[in-house]
Length: 318
Image 1: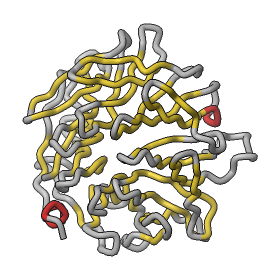
Image 2: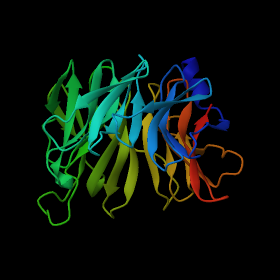
Image 3: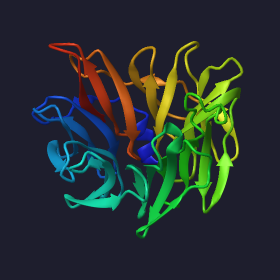
């Protein structure tokens, strides 16, 4: 087993990251250099995309609007997310060397870049003002194309080979033609639907370098079961009975991070066949949620606090 995979299965120490003047934040992604991205609250109550490196926080700014959000960072240090413009519309954006670039609206009402890898950016654009107006897009060399799946679609992860994971056919109230959302993988124009465990819907959360996917899939009773897909077969991930456990990320060694919703705790699966292990809480916190895991096994997410008021702080587990 590679050293990075072995290290990732060890117990983690939780460290809260610094925030902007508003004193709250979320950590969404971490690359293999240990740079973390997410968002933090300003004293005004607005939220800005931020990055953390060497324990220091950096405000990434906006396109002139009030709010921005950073969702992912790749091996080259490119950060992607969304930012409001002066009129309040959300644009997909990227940051490189601290400079923000407007990726455009692609003919929609707003856009959001969710993941980046090896020069490819994926995300969602709102083609018209409805939940089912969402279209998943792939942006490469400045050219954006829609992924050919049913409406109500997301693109939530992309790997170095350009394989994309997401979910399509999220149901809007009053639109029974889209009753069953489905996890999918898109690769070079070919869509593979990952299916369910006998229920109606599934959600694709993340994809790693080998093309393995994690997410949740309904069983016949309607329970959302965490799963691991190895490229051909979908298997359930171990989870405590009657507890809602959701995987959110997977590294190249198939170490999975996620959250036990019942226990309100960030967890990792050291292998797809192992039971989830709770990550320690930072001092003073009451709960935690995992967002991303890198190839060294570092996990980022957030911890919740109830004193002096309810708030969330960005956290890294190493």
